[in-house]
Length: 249
Image (cartoon, rainbow, N blue to C red):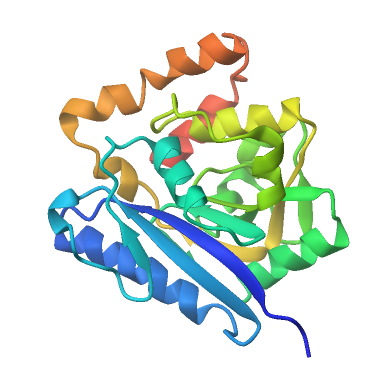
């Protein structure tokens, strides 16, 4: 009998209305239906930004309402700190998980123990970049990591990775958090891959649309200056701007 694998899932949610509340629950429900619970046990932690819900708990989750002001990496760090399984998946709430998505990533990591970080394949996003769902793992390199191989809405990692790089940089409150993560992986020579046999669909723009108008610039365009201060103003390849347009379209 195989030993059950424990995976921690950290979902960032902003259920400011019933539609977004339902979106988070939909992600949780598709996650629970995606794997045989005799084989894989998910511990789901929802970090909820709408503090007016306060005591509300999404079904089958531990829902947490931080006192701290929202920051993408800050809230992910809170979720990571509340969990302890050997695998952690950092997620947006606008996701649909498909059958055996986690099994496929675990298989890839078992076959290549140096693979500490991975993304699943999204049928809406990756075909637009002409990345076909044929190759089991597309390994990230300095040349391609920001060309759709690393995406920030669903990153599956071994906890050992956090022990190597430390907490996520909390200066990144929204945009550029995934690029900073990618640059950090490259700096530490940590292997990342897009597992095309693992399917998680990103519904897109739900999290962007939830940002309050007064905070949009601070969470988006202003993050570019933070990134360039850390990595240099030539760190973002020109073609990666095309990726941004696709993400926001």
